Amino acid sequence: MRFAWPSRRTLPLALFFGTFAWSFVYVSLPFYIQGLSTVDPVSTLRWTGWILGISALVTVVTTPVWGRLAGRGNPKTFYVVVEILQGLGFVGMAMARSLLELFLARLVLGAMGAASTFAFIIAGRSPDRDVRREVAAIQSAMTVGQILGPLAGAVAAARIGFVPSFLLGGAILWGCAGLVQWGVPQPRLSAAVEEERRQISWGEVLVACFLVLAGSVQVFFLTAVLPQILPPLGVATASTLEIGGLIIFASGVGAALGSLAAPRLADLLGERRTIALFLASSSGLLALLALTRDAWSFGLVRFFQVLCVAPVFPLAVARIAQRAGGEAIGLVNAARIGAAFIGPVAATTLLTWTTPAVVYALLALAGLACVPLVRRRPRASGVETQARGGGGETPS
Image (cartoon, helix red, strand yellow):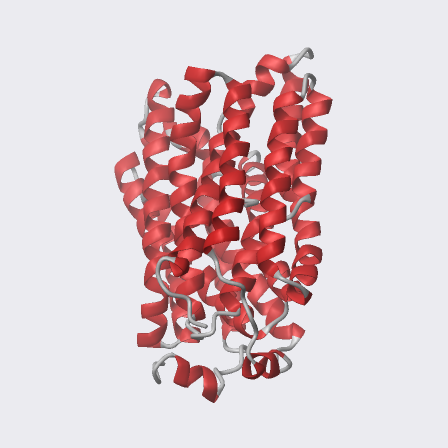
């Protein structure tokens, strides 16, 4: 059985709408918390951080467990069930009438797992063995969803209210469940792939986790510190939100383009060389941000930096997805989700006692430190080389 259009496009489409729904709701949560709060501003700020971050923290812990269960069973069924449960979690947020209730709703939502883990498991079972392109398409779809979701969510919350927008987000997730249930064929493991899965080591999985973590932190850190770094670049306080939004949008476009280019780059340069080259280039460009003197040059360097780091995730995940079980795939995906928490926390913490230039330099060094790990990754097997024609990162 071969994934053919439209079924081959159905899974990325579902991931797009799923990520869109999460971003659609997430953007209005801080404002909803402000309106719901009955405590002082400092306590409200603390609640905001925990309510926003608790889902990702819990998902990091539960994703490997969900991945192991799905790897032993039917990942398509798990995808559908989790999307339905996440939709119910959004309903739970809409029903919350206090900060504690909202916090508990978000905590339970995080325990429901990440649908992207099941998507990567399904991609790893693709009969045509074109796993890199499947993973890259999924990653690009998620990135586009993250770009468009906040804009639509802000408009929806302003026009129809917070609670209806939460319910609408849940309905979108239920639509994704139906899309996968009726549009994605049952994934199956061939005997050859099952045999190859026994060849992977946990050392390879850990290397992939470090690569994904280092690369994803370089993507996720910036949003949290934009209000502090834009004024020194000459941006008026009244314009920080608008200019910051443009920079985030440009970063998202760079991430989508980089993910789409990943399979072709790996064919031309080889998988390991591509990861090492582009992770090193991203780290260099990240350090270069310290030399920019205005918002436009900053945004341009940031665009190319994200463009370079974007291929790291799909290439690292594709190898694991093709050769490992669901638990390993869940662990690598948990590294991506964890980076969405670690990146902003590390950046904001560092910025309290040092300058933006030091923040960029330290994050760049962390990326460069992972480059030698790529050389430790084993070369592709003969079967995998034939499959590519002989050629050389939010819970959802």
